[in-house]
Image (cartoon, rainbow, N blue to C red; front, side):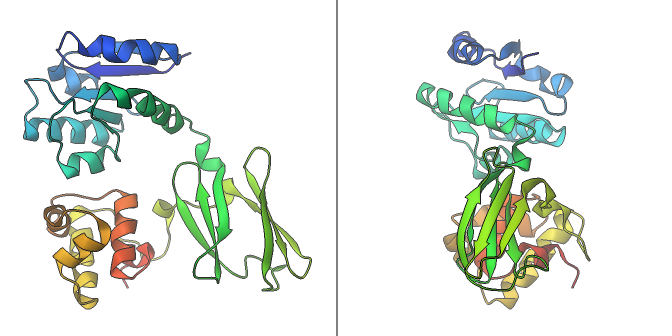
Length: 268
């Protein structure tokens, strides 16, 4: 059964712009009025929100996209010449189309994100730039640093080669000593399943923790913005507890501060 993509727009030329390329890629298409987003939202629903609708000023667009994401939907935003706040782009995880030329790329992105098995495949495995770890990037974008020794067979010698299996579900590491080790993508916990003294993803507590770590590192919000490319007002929102960042954004902030994401989530 094909996936359905819901289009939220009341503009006559919007649905044809998306319908044809979506149907060519095997998607079913449903058109809803912009004011129906609350009733139509469902978990795992893929949708495109037309930012150029008269209904959507900046606050209404933020409300619609935030509500859809909170309900577990997968929102894209079609800007069509409209300004889109950085926080909207963060909620959509960067899934913003600005002209019709972006639609084919967005649909390819949508197909990838609807693939529930992608987290069980490696996108890339390499030696970490730090040298003492293995960096594994999964198909859903999660990045995992694996400290050596990886297991009881790991003698600590140099990694000579890394080869992905045909299905990308495994990676074979050959060491200089001749030892061979196998990594399985499905066995690697994503960053949101970290154990220990984890802080629940509560915006206020997370914001206070980020501010504490930033100050300990001697950084201003402006410097953190420069290092991450995230606008300072958005960092201020996060620290004030008015916006809970995605795990990807949290990782960027932690890296710029100079701490692992696990420390931001930790009570210690």
